[in-house]
Structures are given as C-alpha cells and as structure tokens.
Amino acid sequence: MKILTFLHSFEPGGVERVALRLAACWQKQGLEAPVFMGRLDGAGRIAEAERLRLIYPATPPISPAWIETMWMIATLPGVIRREKPDALFCAGNSYSVVAVAMKLLLGAECPPIVAKISNDLDRRDIVRPARWLYHLWLRIQSPFLDHIVAMEASMKPEIAKCMGTPDDRIAVIADPAISDGEIRRLARLRKNNVKQVSGRSFVAVGRLTRQKNIPMMLRAFAKGSISGDTLTLVGDGALRKALEAQARSLGLANRVHFAGHVDDIAPPLAKADFYLMSSHYEGVPAVIIEALAAGLPIITTDCSNAIAAMLDSGRLGRIVAAGDEQAMARAIKFAAPDFHLDAERMDMARQFTLENSGRLYAGLFAALADQQLGEHGFLQIRSMKP
Image (cartoon, rainbow, N blue to C red):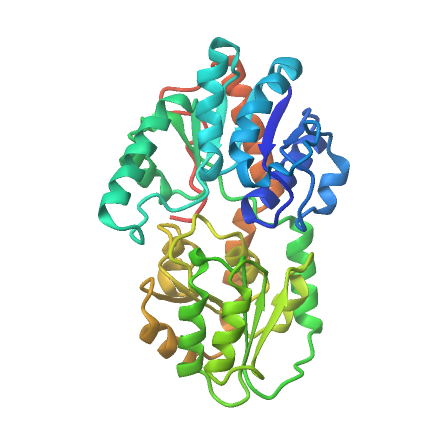
C-alpha cells in the first residue's frame, strides 16, 4: 500500500514534524510512504526525512514560498497521477484547501483522502463575521474528505458540529507526538538533570506567531514571577524582535532567554521546572505531551477542547481561560513542584506514542482501500482514559 503525504516545506511546525515522523513510521511498518514537498528549504528538516522518498517539483527561478498553496495545487495533481497512491494524507487544517482542490481537479482519479484535524475548530479568537465564514468553509470541505481523524476523543463532537461530518467518517487516533524511545530518553534526562539556578525555571516551545500569544505570556510572567525565576522561549518566528523588545520594556531582559529554533527540545524540557503555553488556539499540542513525558507541571490556556482531557481536568496542570493574563500570572506566582504526579504524567504521555498511532493509521488506510469501514466507522477508539 502507498500513502502519499503532501507538505509545503521544512519550515518548522508541529504539523509538518508529526507528518514526517508518521511517514517514516509507516515506512518501517512496510508501507510505501513518499512525501511530496512543495519546496525543500526550511529549518525544520528532521532526521526522519533523510530516510523518506521525497518528491518535489522543479524549483522555479523565484521561490514559490509566497504562493506555496497555489504552487502545491498546481504541481501535486501530476504527482498523484504518476504515483497512483492508495490514499492521500492531509496532515492538518492548513492543507485542507489542497485536499479539496485535488478532489475537484482529479475527480475519480483522486484516491481517498484521510485528513487530520490539527487545530481547534471553534476558533473563539476570530471576530464573529470571519468566524461564521470559517465555519462555512469547514462545512464546504467536509464532503471532499473521505475520513477525518480527531487527535483526541473530545475533539470528535467538535468536528461533527463544526464540519457537519457524519460520525461514521470520524476516527479517533491519538496525536503521535512522541516515540517510546523519546519517553525513555526524557525520563533519563530529567533524572540526571542538575539544577543550575536558585529560582524556578519556566519553558515554552513554539513558533513566535500570533497564535501562540507570547505577548500575554511575557506580561503574565512579569507579574507572576519572582526574583531568580527564568523563562526560556524555544522557537523562532516573525514576532521575535518585537517580543525581545517587549521583554526589555518589562524589565525581563536578564530573565527571559530567546533560544531560537532547536532541533532537539528534550534538553530544555528536561532542565525546566514548569511548562507554559498561552495559545489562542491549538489542536492536541504535541509539546504538551512531551512536557508531560518530562514530568513538568503545566500552565496553559484552554486553547483546545483536548486540553482538559490531556491534563486530567486540571490535575496534571493549571488551565486558565485563553487571553486571561491575570489568571496566568496567578498560576505562575503559585506554581510549585508536585513530583507525586510524575507517574500519572508519564502514563498520559504514553497514550500518544508514534508507534501505536502509526499502526492505527495504517489500519485506517487499509480499511479505506478495501471499503470495509464498519457501521460506526473504523477505529472508534478513545485516546484518553474514561
């Protein structure tokens, strides 16, 4: 069986990282798993990519980065006709327009499409008229997607509501955020970590974009932290210079470290005492799973329907309303270690392993190819404990 994944580039992003790792996992499991890349540049190229067969169009004289979606829509149909995959994997919400275009352009030649919902669909951060249009687009795209994957059980009702997708076309497969080996490595790094500072160490990982709402995090940290506390921001993006200036204006220049993009986030997670997330919206944030595996107490906004389940309704971390600066500042102020919950955090992280989810995806692809989906859909499993 051949599964074709399509990605814009190697620009750093959780959706792309997970997709590349999944493709490598499928390849290990005996599937053909080529990946179409619109372009080959970007700082997010991971080791797994070196083992994959990458397909890419001839590079034009001018980089197609500024029209990457249109570039993919123009170049991908020919690859599909030539490769004849058994299924297409749409790795996240941002690629759904490409998936719809393939159905329209290829018609009966288009193989079944499995689309993973990678972000919150309700999008309370969007103003009402734009939000209505976004929800209309979700309903338009739904009939073009043969099967939709929710990354956590609580996301399934949201998909049914916002997209109008029938229950039998929604599977629940846990976000494959971490491997068994990475869980063991994080535990080992955490155990061997020697604390270097007297204060508390906070860490946040993600692209420095509007979605992550880092300005609010910095203001909350300025209000809630005490002398000696530090915050490390791992990741890069268009807002970096503005955020560095904000940190200076808040008097945090010596206590907030901008680490930029790093290939391996395990060491900064293992060295921290607490994990922070301030996003407006997320899907099932892979870095939350990695933070759980590292044994970190988590302070996060309610940026996804999955957050409450991932943190066991707040037992494994503090959940505040998205955009609530005062609540996040209070959570930071009173953050304290709770080592007695480390085993439960590890158990939660183990429900999101690459190996397990890779097998479930492979089974879903096989069922689609054979048109053997059951009455209630394939793989109607819970990714969380009831």
